[in-house]
Image (cartoon, rainbow, N blue to C red):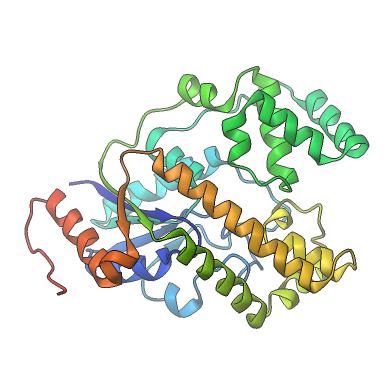
Length: 320
């Protein structure tokens, strides 16, 4: 039986560790990263990318694919991920999708709207770029909210590249992204899927986020961003708009202090986590598992047994 498992949830909730343990109980498991920033090379610390030892346990996909100045859309990801999923099925394996980029996993499961490349959007793009230069990003972010508040709610106010791209697509097609999704979507993935949303108390989650940012600084986030700048990937590079990187870049170039940078990273990451929580709770297919209430082993047991149930209910795992 063709099946997939999705493990999603807010940043810092513990998706990676749980997924690696779940994979031990699956036949020929392969992990697909569902993170729009882990696809970029040289960006390891700030994206909390799995290390080499962890990658060695199971095959991993969609890591270190692109350079930071290359763009990659949800549609491109969905096409590539579906292709990989079918290859894993052909080998008798189980695709385990892990990550918090909701637009990515939704595009895999539900289909993706097709960006019509035959419609020339150069004039729209050039106009938006000129407005960005003249007005700054704040008015454009507000305009996105006026046109498509749902899309705006999913994007950080300082994420210039995503704001500009969303506006370009909306203005090119004359419809909000949600309508494009419904009318231009492809077929659903068409398999039995266990879709899990990991949660915990919000205050506890925010504490974990703050602690993770501190750890990233200890691990060398400033040096990582400095190396990217030395390679020529400045603030205009597509992936450098990522939380953590844009603030440290501003510190390195003397625009803010390190204390301000750290405070901004923590605040923006908490805001991002809040949007992730909202996204997940809107999708009723997601099975919410509270990591605090159940404990890590309890969550793993429920995921594995939930998958086995979909396989016919044989060989339940007891971790008590």
